[in-house]
Image (cartoon, rainbow over all chains, first blue to last red; front, side):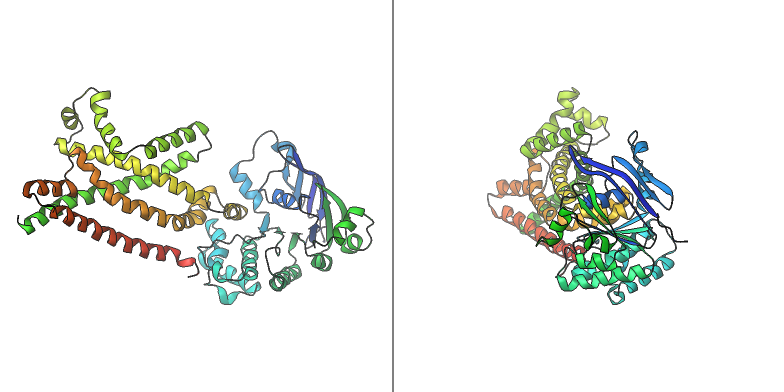
Length: 255
Length: 229
């Protein structure tokens, strides 16, 4: 029953002008697993995540979920993806941003409900119940009526996790979810992510929190210069790799 | 000089002022939004053309623009203004003059508003659009449900500036014999050889812009409901 190749990415390439940011990325991820992507800034981690979410369109390669190809570079090089098609593809993935990007003019409940409501995913009452249960899950049920500016960074990030979950994405992506947070607020966000793992949510996390990556991930990828340099279980990557660059990266004071 | 008859006539003049003011806003705000979209268009020739028009209109005097508009029928169409008024169904030349002034004012203010709108729209962080995109929203939904409210919040203050400037700019219409309040006041000044009618007109402006200031203050508070105070 366990699907080891729930998410499959192969040969993913992305160029910005002459700059090759992704030079052929291959990996796969099982259903309900957590993949952490680590690496220095500029290594292509965030671009990889943005390609998965179709905020950038990869130049080449393939993305498949549960055996269904949702992106095939060879097809899309010829003609552009239509807007409606793009929106459907995006819904396979959810994305939690580094700086939350909550909608400031809406309160917590409205932030979580906006997209499902506009996409007509159910009756207002159903959507509200669902939104409330998600907000409860991230521990903010008493903040329903608050506006983002009235919340701490950690609380805002938890709301944005609830907002991403509201559309039932197959895979939830996090782009350095705790980089904009003070250490004491980081903990509460990481706790929510751990809890999500219990519910079988498949996640891809770009992170600088090495302890966290080691403790919760099923797989870890170390990226360097647009390529996956080391891949494996947390033990393999953190304890048993003899990759020089990875050692340098892990021992650098920056993390 | 009968004080109350002067005030009565000034009121009539101020009625014309208010009409010009209100109609100009009614036309120039939506027109300004369209201009802003043209100016931000990905179709470069349209964007360049719009930016050029905005440059010319903001770079020249409103009075000159009023005069140019007045000459369009007679120069381009070779029809005297009197016949032109009849042709488009206006009963008097003075109504036509008012329409000319309204056109010039609306175009002029649309350009100023366009710059404000464009600034407001460009000021919205890219992350807001991206958040909408990853949630599967259409471009239209992102604009109307995510961006617009934030744009309005950002532009109330600069818009209120323009609106209050417009109150006083309406006085330029007298150059085309539109009987707005300042023209009426000058008539009284000449007739009675006293300056007081001009001062009274000043009081009208002051009271009205005071009202607008209060209105905008209220609006700003109302729209800023989601910010920490």
